[in-house]
Length: 230
Image 1 (tube, rainbow, N blue to C red):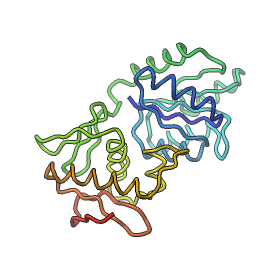
Image 2 (tube, one colour):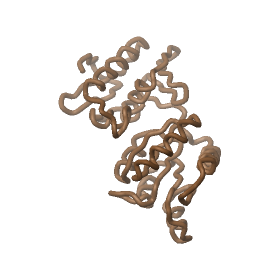
Image 3 (spheres, rainbow, N blue to C red):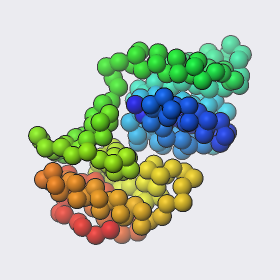
């Protein structure tokens, strides 16, 4: 299960990620509302944990924009505010639940369990493009009856590319999504994992390809000529 954390307090964001990862959740962490909106629109998350007071775009605006674009991922708003009007604003914007800081880790986990139970049938378990299907629980990549297990970083890379099939994905965005916003990973790390993923796609006999676009990034294409360059 994958959770997107959008929190500008870096220490709190790290603490939230640590709590969730210790309890079996996968996490992505970003620190401003504009980036949070972009990741929420691109990724496939089970829940978004969203602070209200954020730079660039506040949490109320983020959740309202998500709902206008048809993103139905459950949103848990976090805020130091406890005034009733703020809670009403958040829920009216499209949030599913509301927690006031500070809170106990057990309370956070209980809210997340309730949200995922409530969401039920609309949670994404698989992501597909062309003849490939990525299982978001097992991290297996399948083509027809044949499948192969991906390492965690291969899985994260595949998720970014398949979710954006047909679109150009920059190396910078891949580094942020696969290694994290504070990572020291460089272009050669991306190139290595693209190569690993290409080999596994070839093993599966997939007709899909990861195209290299010079100075732009990569594009996952289901109707492309094979490109083995980095």
